[in-house]
Length: 248
Image (cartoon, rainbow, N blue to C red; front, side, top):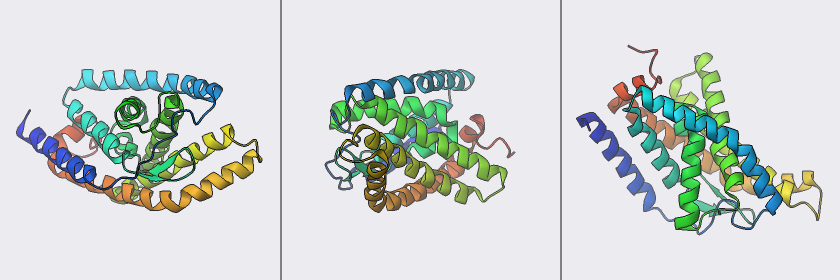
């Protein structure tokens, strides 16, 4: 690795260490067995085209420029660490930051589907966070829906010439919240026999809001801080992936 890349990896490792030593609640994504089998299968099928698109996007990016691998790996590590810090919320789920906004802003939403899937598999197997049967549902909410909203909002704000740091914060903030809107939707869709879908969805959203809004704000701030660091120490890498292509 070059000296600049070593600095980038060192900074990412330091961030992971700082986040990793923070106290975390013993909670999960939508946990194993929390969804009926038909919903697990359905959400898995829905994710397939996004995962294929992500695979081809990553392959294209790396074939064009191998130096992008460092940023891609850092984005995946950020997702793993930050989404492992959880606060218990709705029964069968939890509130936590997602970390997917960083990858979506850097590479677009498609590659994040693959990064998120890998993270969710490792968390389910090694940390008992989430589950293998609910992998499809968790992948769609955290690694598909959230990143697409983050990228779309960041692109829109960029076109409107909004301050870049403000755009990054708002994109990561809204993307995080949208992830939990989808999670609330998934839980309400699967568990509404005692009430209506609308009531179940409202209850889930209200319960999530108390913990998720401040967590989304923290994620937005962390994403801005990381992007400031990358713009200071990894400009060549950011230019190679197109993030800074408008700059000389």
